[in-house]
Length: 612
Image 1 (cartoon, rainbow, N blue to C red):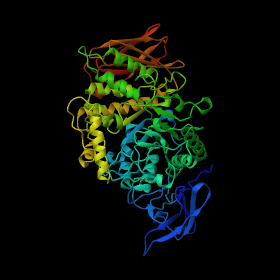
Image 2: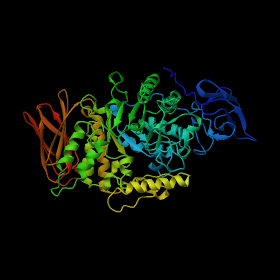
Image 3: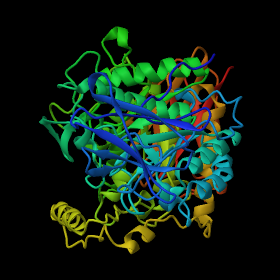
Image 4: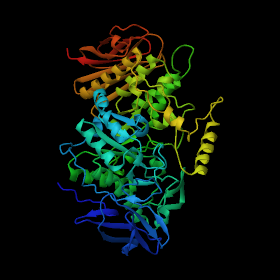
């Protein structure tokens, strides 16, 4: 089926060497486009159309040509829908022909949300070169690990060469320092050739403070609402129709022109819209319809600081129809249970209850008003969970990853809890072998005043932490360099952890019972320090037990199943570096009404029921 959508704003390459320029600029009296290069620039007036849209077809313009819009005969600005900013956020835009790239992924059909095992990367620190092409060369290792999709932190053109990406100023232009549009296309094409999907983190709640010229063109922002980053995007006020189109088109642009398999929408709690349909529903529906025309799967995933069932509930049932949402409460519960100090060697009862609740029911246990419980109405495949991500690591005093916070045995239990959970798992780059290099917040704005403002903000945030932690300078290159993973499997423990992650992912992908949303899940726990899960589907059953205490335990949970339990993986196996209680297979038995599972200290195990 041929897709009917196409991007009409910005610079569109036409046959016979001409380009159509189109820009929405209701706040400007006159707009012209200046084509740069050659002996002198050429300037063409854009004709006024309906609702503030200006457009003109300019002959003799080739892909790669630089151009700017001249506003009211004076200010020169980049295109708000620039596909490429080769000279940075303040420089001219470049004409791009998205049809010129030779894709080789015609047979790729995407990945169902329930089949995702995500791997989050930051392109700039993922490899030493910090480019899309260098990331593409690392894909075989991710394929060997078993993950199914790479989730890329934002790549929209940002100021400087070092940035998390959430300060992007040009939402349609892949970062030039990473390799620009063609580099991103090569990465996605290589990922599909390797059997991996690519999901892109996009920011539709704000733009970065440097290089953001949207407000000069039209009412993209509103003072009626505020976000932590300034004025909110105008999704429901005067002039909002074109603003909504700008961000809906942006989502489709990534899916269509870059063959992306999905988008992760940043901080949707800061997207305000009192209209109908909500902009998130509009984006999800447009993406779903366009994916159907393209004949492939596309996932729209929300990140929010609260659990909101509306995000993933179908439109016909009062929801907005996104495929999934992040559930950071799972990571907080795991960290709390693994790090809670107890002289007895067991996690405290409160942290254990929170962890059991995180397995049982995604909800927001952080106080009244923080979210609504999902209950049983929403499948587990609608929630993405992790042990750590860019925010949770970098917002610690020293940017510590989980491997720097807990011992090797606890790292293995954490890995098992993530990959034997009933949810969609996400790994953060380097997690699979216990990377201990920190991951900090960093940026490299050209505006010195803005850099100092960011420093002051981070210092103020650090004052709330106990002790005398020294804040890493977010503007220093050294902070960025320290945030690179080392990629060294140079110790037996790292090699063992890498083997465990690979085997857990293999078990998850090869066992239908562990597919999110496909089974019924029961959870038991005990104040003695253990949690047990039971997955059932028809006559099939899988049991998983996590011992967070420093002594051996026997876990029990109700089970009407008969037959025997066969161990399929245990974290204390010799292959995974053994454990405090030895590396022998754990024991388990099924009685008439309960399962009894005995495992050693600080370990996890999984069993499959075999029919009698």
